[in-house]
Image 1 (cartoon, rainbow, N blue to C red):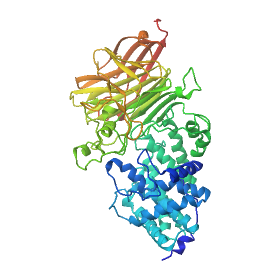
Image 2: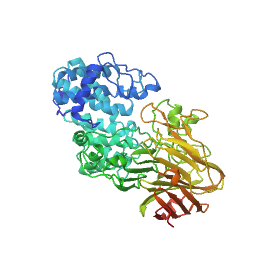
Image 3: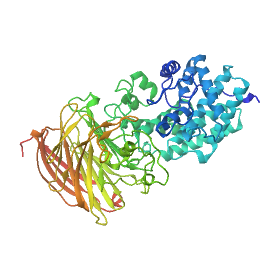
Image 4: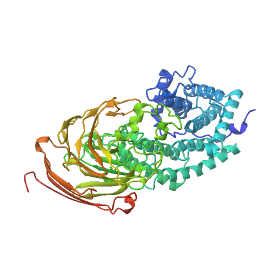
Length: 634
């Protein structure tokens, strides 16, 4: 039966909820029409041929998700909204009808992605616009109208079901985005659609406060998911689907926070499930894509917008601390900025790696210490299996490595991964962050394996050196074998030294890695691109990509408490010497002195609080005294 009300509903332009740049969509649409559609290097699909809706297997799970999201018609609908050229709408309608005919609500006969939560949200607003635009263009006959409207009502019912909404994860934002866009488009002609729109406004407010900290950072442990959600929220604002001024202000705060998670190389900081995505556009495109001056500036290398992330930024509620400062010798060359970012967050199991207190470091125009990356969501683990109980959603060996403790710049106890599934999330493990005499300090503390307290203090002298001070103690005096891991960016070449490691940096220059406390710690060997006896020394910058990279470590064996004090200095070895440092057994009092090409350095550290499961709550923080004099002077 003809739905006359749907025909007369208010017409809105296509919602760019994924925050694509308009004119770029036309170029993409033309490419799809001529050469087919692909995503992340997956097999290309000729859109003039039958679409492969069937699920090909776990190895192509993400590809099949994009297919059922109708990602291949996104650019076509955007291009039609801008040009009203029927060459874009016709093929989109054919694909949308084919999907709707074969996939009534609840059907998973050909693919579990057909009614997957996030796919439903993305597909809902695409089908909604497709229905209305095709009707307005008079290319929608009665049978097609009936099929599409029935599918839209299926999507309405699915999205109204609270039990189907992923309130806890970023998927929920895409569900609510689709809900708002679909509901608004037909609210004046359909009671269920009006209810869908009203419920979406309530859900969005709930999700914003549930999934973001008060400091504007997403709680899924992965800056690239922060980016994705920020783009979706901005798309909602620009489509006038978010009209509440407080919510609009929070969206701007979320976008500004994202600017701190862009490295000097212009990539997203790849904590957790984040690829090393380039965030750089031309000035014009950056201005179109982002709304805040800070993000526009960072996304264009200063060609647009205004301001710059500079100094120490602490996201205390979310659990991140970041230092970014210009090179004193080239202050306008942002590629040479010093950049230190630490993750100290555990809010849920969602996208959480075994990376407690890990960090990345960029300096002198190149990445130095990296996070392993994401690799891909490959090989679903079976519920109740050993891997599942250890917190792994995916069973592919390289993917499991990327999640493991030994893939991150942190402490590994007894060769085990830090707990995730059976551990209570601690929220933020940050204790404090401050600057003292030109040294930037970040202190954090968490509990590992129920009884081991891990204290970490990062001390950065931008452009010169980094000290990583780790103290650990078992509250039940159990002994442990402990390894402190460091992962170099691909292209750096490390060789072993009796006291640590010498590194030739790929962009020129040297890095010395030394222990400042003698007699407690032994250096391990350099491991790169290893598959046996275990996977180690790999970096993944994108889907299914793994590049060998040097992994370094220091080891302490059979101890219930201990201290690592590791210096990483950007100095040639011939300029380096050190005196034996001193520390108490808990690492609460540490003194060290060394000489390198930057001078003679003395550090005295006094750490507050006490060891114990509740140590973070009792901490008074640390104090650091630092002096430097020219080499050769007392």
